[in-house]
Image (cartoon, rainbow, N blue to C red):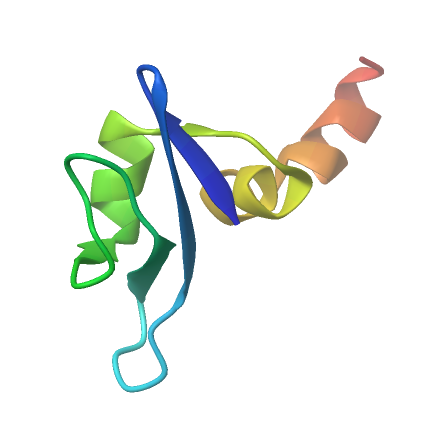
Length: 70
């Protein structure tokens, strides 16, 4: 999953030993591969880039969009 932080981009994956936590797999200047982030932190500070990331931060969006028609 890819997220942007201003002009920087990080890739994450679920942390295998900590549910609800995400390990940075491809870092940037501010977040390297040693960082583990909570979903709430990602939602607050990052912008999702790919479909997996959007699904992670807004899992109900497809159902909501279908109900509202747009």
